[in-house]
Image (tube, rainbow, N blue to C red; front, side):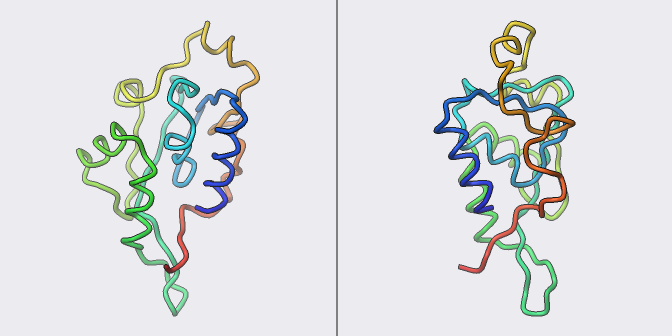
Length: 142
């Protein structure tokens, strides 16, 4: 999560717009909390996947981190937190925000908006900035 925090702070500070296209899961969804909403749009192919934060226990097994999950929730803007709460909260199981629910939270990319963000950072799908082999949101012990 620390790497994504640093990355999305840099994107925010750059002033560049962001297009979410394809699947943006786990720590990738933190973009919603770091980049101003007026600089983010989502294509009709976008899907955001959310789950609880995890860490490794002493035996190397992945376990849910309650404090990490709370930190992750605190990253999201209120409409995202409300959507997550309506869908059972963050658990080890992935929940997906897409379609109408996504369009109600993240501005859809229409043709004029996409043209204005042609140099935008793209997340998800083929144009994903962060590769999909990056581990899911994880937290060190605090």
